[in-house]
Length: 455
Image (cartoon, rainbow, N blue to C red; front, side, top):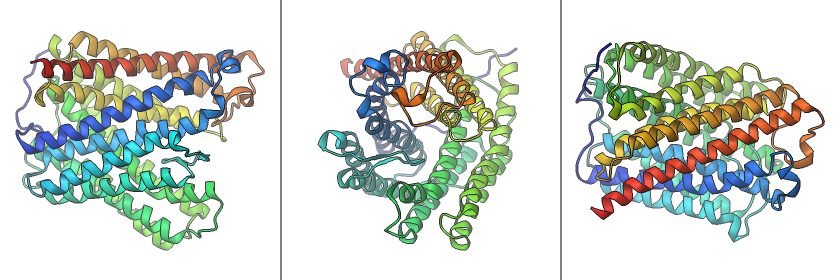
């Protein structure tokens, strides 16, 4: 067993404008998590047995769920990608970078406030659920316009020289690949917008609108998560047997797979059964092999390296991320019908991505000029959040096996047997623990930010 020093060329933290811009994207991501966490309390209570019978805001469930998902998944994930893209680009087109951040922030604020500004008509379509209301839809459009500007600047400014020669160059190539996949996602979204008949039933319309782009955004999230895994492994002191050429090859596999998306859009009828399945296959095949490749290399390093106490919160985040992402992926093989096994699958995957970003946030805060997170508290937060989410998805998967339908609440869940009640009680317990872990993350982060302010 050995303790290994961090390699200096792995995604170095720059000084100056790039770091300031990256910190802005981090603030946006953390703020979106704060809003999502407040809404999560309502969501868990409205589905927990006994409590759901007396909870006064069950009618608000779907409205809250839409905004919660968009804040905690879409905006948090894409904002954190903005952190890494900003750190690894050059200082060219900084005005475009700040414009992208400002526009995306405006869109996020409007999304969060839209239910309180009268937006209603929740539609639980996949990937980017919506409130079928003008103010909400304008807010989403504003956010994605800002995000598109971010993608364009990232593709222009991230250097690719030496990608296959250094660890840092290889991870920058991964981030470039993620930005390219993101631009393909925006292209798929626009293609769907101009292709889908405007008289399509609303739920069907938004399902198709975000279907192709949503799958590509999941691939983008996975690429960025993999760079986070490598960064967490390196910064926690592991000696990875991972050559830059292998990294570039694995990232290239995901980028190459995503290039099939325009072919699907142009050759298959919009919304046809084959269209639907091709995008699902694209994501599964495009993600599977690279994730397994990186995971195996990191697992070998985990077994061989002794981690210093000052870095154990980074290792905890890395391990938890890999466990939850793997559990979510495994549950996906047991999906049969439209039930709560589906949210068990994607919650596991989503939380896997989130945990990697949480760990990287802890690493970045002092390097952005803020205080250092308390290591023991940060490690405890990671364990609480991961354990709660593991219980949460276990309860959902168990309930799905007994036919409990997804996207319903209260008496509509049909909890008429002991196993159904037990499964959703486990879901509720896990959700409550996860919420505690989520708020603890915000406490640790805000304490670190406040520490700098005091200094």
